[in-house]
Image (cartoon, rainbow, N blue to C red; front, top):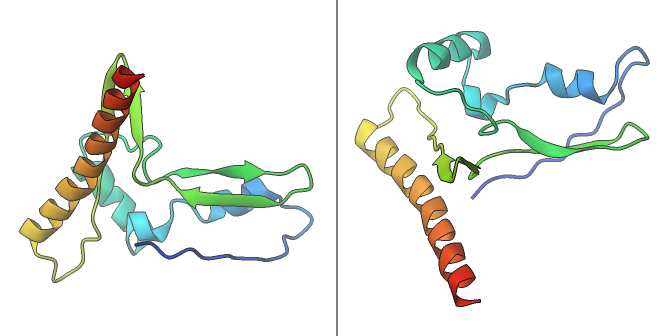
Length: 124
């Protein structure tokens, strides 16, 4: 389960929605803290770039309004192959085995969804 938050504010005239979005990226919930050092560690340890995973999906309206969400539970299909990434919230007292299992469970949900879609497509 994930928490949905609505954040409202006024942007100074010299800034726009893109500036606001960029100022908060990446979201602390997927980078860790302190953010800059956490991002350096991610760069050192993760063999693949995150791509859309942990990025954002949303819109920016003509009037400057914006609504986005963090892109989790996502799959990319490229060259007829599905690529997924999954993560867990690693903290000081995390149990590595439990965190690995959490990642496996998150990833397997996407694989099951893809398998179901293939079955439904074949039936129709």
